[in-house]
Image (tube, rainbow, N blue to C red; front, side, top):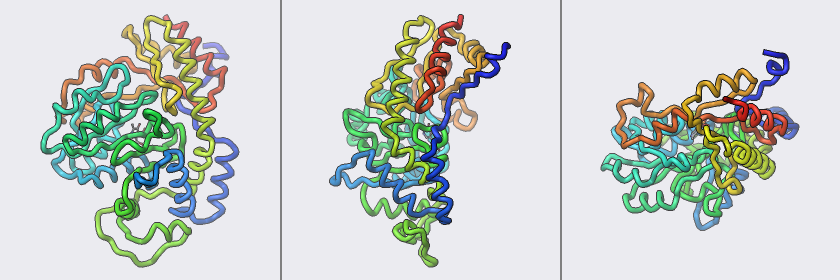
Length: 382
Ligand SMILES: Cc1ncc(COP(=O)(O)O)c(C=O)c1O
């Protein structure tokens, strides 16, 4: 290894922490109210403004500690409980499978479409039984699910959809911002997402009654009014009416999230440009697939390639030796010991994709030199 190789280290993810985030964190720390408070309220308002809800839809945002917590609470709100089933792509984040199990229910694994790696809506209905309580629709990376078809299935079978939009906050589906498509939508603002709170999540829910239930559920069931906590103070007496968790968001996290959302246009544009470049520069290579998403309408979380010549490990080792880290999103859910006995449909596409997929580095305001270096490195792989 020569010196230039050793000095290059490009991670898959790199949070965009600029002076605004640092100032926001400092300000929130100096406030001295570290728990749920005024910044969380403002964060919810910022999340909602990107979603452009119309008043008639009665949609609201409830911020929580992680995307995983958002899924868990959404499933509980939908009434998912012991012995129930939730249909999810096997090609999904473990957070979804574990949230289903945390409700006492079981995931049922459905396949994905080869062109978008999102849920294959033509394979969902075969898996529905009287135990099915929810369908999880997860937007993957630069692609958005066929939400129209999913809404139709949901209406027909009277089964709600949980929109896992962990990858698609700030994206649009048929011109409308993500967050407006289903009964429940969840977002993740974890350390590697395009918009981060360090760790954070949010639920989009309809109706004031559901908002109040969620606000108690995220605060270990305490019915003390969020309105009071939003003024950086708390009630000392309250009731507990149902199961709750310590899933609230804290002020410093919200403060950082707000400073990120303020730059969402810049962040999204820079990530779109990097994906476009990857696609243009790599799609000529016959041993890989470099997908073309609808880059103009998404806020890309990842850019993935598929290695078609069976040399994924060799490619990843070679990239690492050149100082470029790569990722795998994901292993299949049905391949994990804890989920291996779950019911499933045919998973031919999933089984193929999990052997081929590689995530390339994608950063907000990505350094052009890094991008060129990654592209040239891949082009030189034999
Ligand atoms: C599709 C998907 N859903 C849910 C989650 C969980 O979000 P969090 O990491 O905020 O708990 C992730 C995290 O990466 C994800 O990719």
